[in-house]
Length: 135
Image: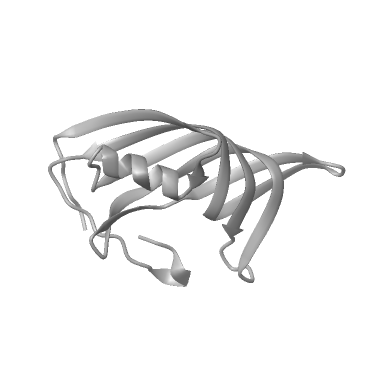
């Protein structure tokens, strides 16, 4: 499927402690009336619960991690705004740099800068696709 949009609005905001993902992000999207678009973010998260593709359920990553990239589609599911949270995270460990990638289920925000491209002239629905990845 291909959709062309000509009306794109850019929304920039920051999330900080004690915000939690995904609730704070979805709240900001609701406040800005973004029902279709694409989100990108970077910053610092704590105590991340992440689902790794092909992994066995949800993994908890304790402590602070740097968000190298966090992105996903914004759309509606069951009448409410939702947003994908696919991330590449990094942290220093006793054995060196650890990189973690997957879909964030929940996290505590340290500081997060967010850019949303809101597609105001189209609508988008999100649904679970292959291996429970939201599309």
